[in-house]
Length: 258
Image 1 (cartoon, rainbow, N blue to C red):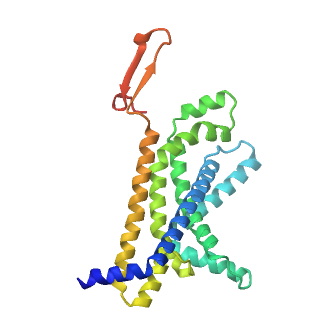
Image 2 (image 1 turned 135 degrees about the vertical axis):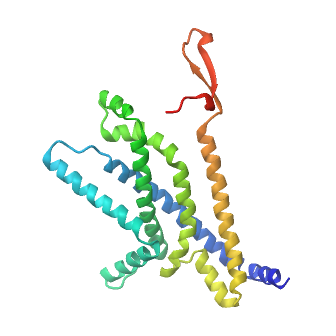
Image 3 (image 1 turned 90 degrees about the vertical axis):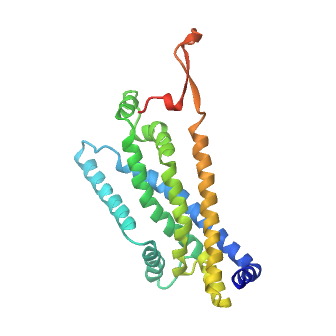
C-alpha cells in the first residue's frame, strides 16, 4: 500500500532526528520526575509538620503552608503549556531579553509541575501511615524529620510508587507541549519532518507508535520494579527462636490488612 510505502520512506530518511527527539523526551521526563519527586517529598514533609505552640513559629508555619498550598494549586490548576510560556518568557522579560537554555528550561518547567502533583500524593501517603508509629517514634526522642526519613517515608515511597510511575508516563506525553518554547523533543522533530515532507498523517502515525513504545515499555519496567518491592509471595513469622513449632509460614493473602 502507498501508506506503508510512504511511512517506510519517511522512517528511513528521518529516523536519526526522530530518535534524537525521543532521547530528549525520555531525558526530560526522567530527570523531571526525579526532581519533582524530591520536591514533592520535601513539600509533603513540611506541610505535615505539627503546628508549633510558640506564636511566632506557628505564624511562620502558617505562612509557609499558605505559600506551598498556593504553589500546588496554581501548578495543578493551570495547563503546563501556559506554565512553559510564563516561566520561559517571564524570565526573558525580567532579564531584559535573555532567555534560559532550552533543555534546562524544559526540565525546570516539568519538574515544578510534577512536584505540585507529587506533593499531594506524598502528603496523602504520610497521612495514611498509622499514628501509632508517630507516637512510638516520638516516645524514643525522634524529631519530626527523623520520623519522616527513618519511619514514614520508606513506607510512603512503596505505597506511592504506582502514582509516581503514572506521573512519569504522563511526563513522557506532556513534554510535547514544550514545543511552544522551541524545545527539540519528539513532537518538535515530528513537526519539522511533517513540514519537510508534507506527509502529515504518515509522520504523526510514526510518532504515535514511538510514544506508545516509550510509555508501554516504561509501564512494564515500573510494574516489574513494583513486584520486586513486594518481596516473596510467602514469608515466615518467627514467634520463638527456640521453638520451631512457632514458625508460621503464611502467604500474602493470609496476612491481616492494616
